[in-house]
Structures are given as structure tokens and as C-alpha cells.
Amino acid sequence: MEPRPTPTRADFNRLYEAEFDYVWSTLRRLGISEANVEDVAHDVFITAWKKLADYDTTRPLRPWLFGIAYRVASDFRDRAWQKREVADAEPDSVDERPTPEGQLQTKQAKQLVLTALESIPMERRGVFVMHELEGHGIPQVAEALSVPLNTAYSRLRLARRDFQQAVERLRGAS
Amino acid sequence: MTPDDLEPMSADLTSLLDAEKPITAAPAGAKAKLLARLSTELFDGPGGDGSGEGSDGGAGGAASSPPAGGGVGASAGTGAVGATASGVVARAVVAKLVVGASVASLAVGGAIGAGVHSVVTTPPPPPIVQLAPVEPPPVAVPIAEPPPVPPPVLEAVPPAVEPRAVQPSASKLSADEQLALEKSYLEQARAAMARKDVDAALDALAQHERRFPKGQLTEERLALKVMALSSAGRSIEAKNVAAEFRRRFPTGLFRAAVDDASPE
Image 1: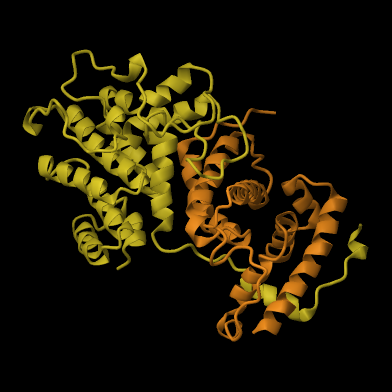
Image 2: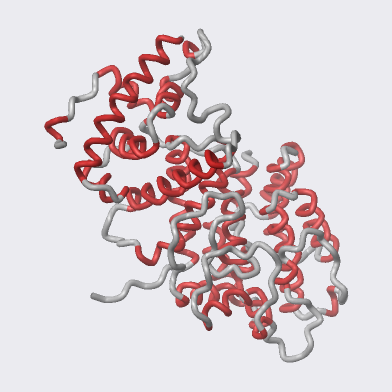
């Protein structure tokens, strides 16, 4: 097997150019607020650059990138929680409180989905987003998130329940 | 737990999820802004060698080794010119590496690639981005004679944009020396933008404009100015500068970055 050429700046630029919106969107789905998404996306691309030499170019890129984004976002949220940082918990982070009456009526379906996603614990949310929104098969999800296959299925089942309950609650509060 | 144990989602929820399936584009300007920041830390800034870790307060990615030195060396090989690109936008950078190759000398490339060179010749450093000024390795200034131009890399990050102690007039500089000096101003601007100090960035760009009104990096300067003004919310000024850019460089390499920061 021939050694792969070492990644260059041009490789990074191509990756960034093609996947910036994907990373940004993924982080928002994973609960990173607008206020913090640039900093977290920064760390995702730093990590991606560091790991680029190990990336198997015969495999799909986005599951690999999602795995990085998921871990970086999880670390960020863990630290934010430990520090009791509220910056990521204000307008659009985890918030179990009912949305004020009438507010949801004006929201688009996208906003409802993002809000409902906030009710799903992070480890389940990663599986849910990858499978339900991005359409990856569960084996691929399990590999990207480095969890056993059965665990991935179990998390998906629980995440679906969480999501359904959240949607019902949010609709009921509207 | 198997797929058979999974109950299908209701049509209502499936339909709801369909609304969020398309990738939502990031806010205008966010892409170019983050690329400038990443380029500074990974490739152009002091210690910019691809070994970086997240910035302070950032999420800190999973631990991993940086790409092998060869990869960085590849950047360094083009880094002499990558310097001119200043990481404003990816598309531009790649092309600029080729365009600038004819003008960037060892002096420029060596100075700019100081941090890079250290990676090529030493084991991979710990995964920490050097955001603070660092001493360059001895090989950072490969100019035979005492250079009239201070090493740009060292001056890319200082919080204050101060004029150099030695400022030979532009007319007395060689093309290479001028390019290095021009580049140092733009590095200052980019470093200032990376730390969200727009005033310092605009100050550095103004200095460049005063010293090199027809400089080799005029296109980059205008592009950076558009980005700086746009990020500061000075949209009207950004629009004016963007219009100047489009008039002077209608097919410029940084056109996409300008359009992104200040759409027509």
C-alpha cells in the first residue's frame, strides 16, 4: 500500500471550502449557540487538520467530520457546564422550560426541530442527528461516534422518544 | 437492540425533520472570518505550523498528532508565497501560492516560514497553538546581510500595531524586502482580526496603504479591509471598499472573499 501524501495547506483549504457550512450547521444541531459556534467550529477545523493525515480518503468525509464535531461540541458543552457558563445556555441551548405561549406559532418547522433537539441528551443527540437528519446508517453512526452498534441503536430509540416528547411538549406549550 | 426493535417514527415527525435536513448556510462573512483566523494559527502566524490546538476557552479538539512534518513542509514550500495570500480565503490562497512564487524570495519565505521550518526540522511540538509572540528559531532570517526588514513573523501578533524601529523608505527596498515589509503589515492586520481587534487591523492596513499605496499586496489589503469593516458592522464603508476592490481587481483572487464579506 502506497503511503498517502501528507496533507497540505491546499488540502485544508479544500476541506474548509467544501465543508464549512456543514460543520456550522452540524454544531448548531448539536446545541452550540450562535454566540459560540464560531469558536467551536474553529476547534473542529483545527482538530480536522491534525487528523487529516489519518483520514481514509476512500471513506465518506462527512461521517468522519461529524465524529470530530460531535466530540468537540461535547467537550465544549461539558466545560461550559462545569464552569456554569451561561453563554451557551441562553437563547438556544438546553432549556426544559416551556416556550412562552404563542411563541411557537410563529416559528418555522426548522426552529421547532432545533428546539426539540435541545431536549435530547448529547450522546443520544449525536446518533439522532446523524441518522435522522443526515441519513447515515446506524453502523456508520456507531463507527463515527465510536460506540458499539447495540448502543447506537439503543440511543436512537431513546432519542426518538425524547424528540417526540419534546415536540409534543413544545406544541402543547404553543 | 436491533433494527427490528426500533419503532418507526410517525409521519408527522418525519415530515417535521425533513424541514431541517438541508444544510443551513452560516451567516454571511462567517466563513471568511474564521478562515482568516485559522490560517493565522495554522499556517501563517508565529509557530503556525499545523500543530495548533484550540484557542483559549475553545472546545479543544480531541488529542491528535499534527500532520507529519512533510505536510507542513509542503506548506512551507509554498509558504513563501502563502505569506502573500495571508489566508484571506481558501480559493485565493491556493492560486496565490502559484502566482506569488515568482516574487517571493527566500528572504520572504524564510522569515514567514520561521515557525514552519522549526517543525520540519524538529519533532512535532505539543498540540498548542502559539497565539503569543514567540522567539523565532535561528533559521528564521536567512538573509545574508543584516536585513533592513525585521522578521515579519515576530511582528504578526503584538497587540499594538507599532511602526518598526527601522523603516527604510519603500523606494530603497528591494522587491523582496518590500514584499516582506508589506506582508508584515498585513500579518499584523490579520492577527488583529483574529483577536477581534478591528481598530488595530484597520490601523495596520492604513499603515500599509500609506507606505505602499501601489504595493504588491494592494489586492490583499483591500480584501482585508472589507472583511475588517464588515466584521465591525461598518457595512457602508465595507461596501465602498468592496466596490473599489471590484473596480480595481474585477477578477482578483480575493473576489470571492470580498463578495462573501460584502455582497454586491
